[in-house]
Length: 194
Image (cartoon, rainbow, N blue to C red; front, side, top):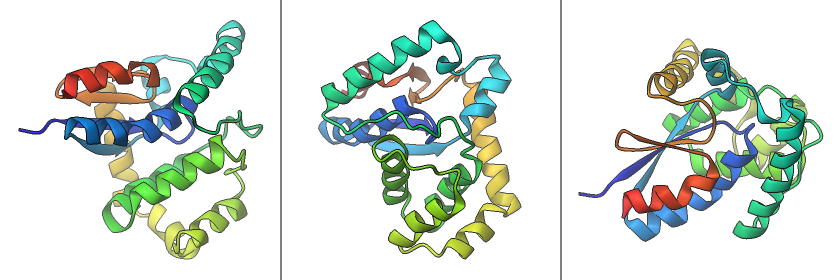
């Protein structure tokens, strides 16, 4: 029986950008499926009493250097976004909606790339609209969708479930009930799937 990896993600996390880009190759090598689970990292931090790493000066400096090392390791473009941090609530609601009614993979690729490779300010609604249009997603339909109560409820439910299962940051990945946190644990994820 093929194993799956549940991937709890938020576009605001640079470590999650790396995991998003690398997990499909791991899934292909192991015959696994990636189950995408949009959640709100801010909600996870609030529920667990955790803090964003960049809010701690010594940790923040280390993290930036480490992210650059991982970009080189994975051969991925990376640049710290000058608009970071910003709220991803509607972007993540959009992920929930597109998981049901569109192409979540292309949307996620575009959002992660815009934030962590192209340094775009996705707090700017016009910038988000341009990305949506490039994906043939109607911005007005998107705005209506992200305001639907069922979409809001599912994102909240995903976040609460992740916390209940032990999540404290992003990316959080589960193989069965085993939790893996961070892009630097992807080798353990691959071992668990093999």
